[in-house]
Amino acid sequence: MSYKLSFTLYFQDSMNVEEKKARWTKHVDKVKDIPEVKEYLQDYVIEPLPAEPTAPKQWDAIGHLLFEDKATADSVLASPKWQAVVDDANDGLVDWTLVLGGVMESKKAI
Image 1: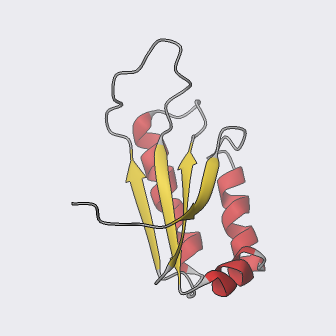
Image 2: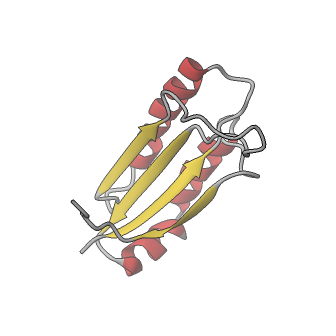
């Protein structure tokens, strides 16, 4: 079983939707430099679901990173290559004040 990390992403409001997608697509190049990442999935919001007027800001995307196991993920997240991924996201892409994440277990329900 893989070790999966997922996170909601909020991109900087200064970019339009196409700029956000293009910038995050370019961000993949940093993740490609880490061979221990088994899979990196990017899910984009293309149309938000209706929400109550008091709902918080809609996230822009969800990222998923898959590793062989927890030890591998811990090693990668402490590495200079991962720091390069974070630095790239810090360079005008992500609003970190809103990002949420966690370790996920996927189960096919239907």
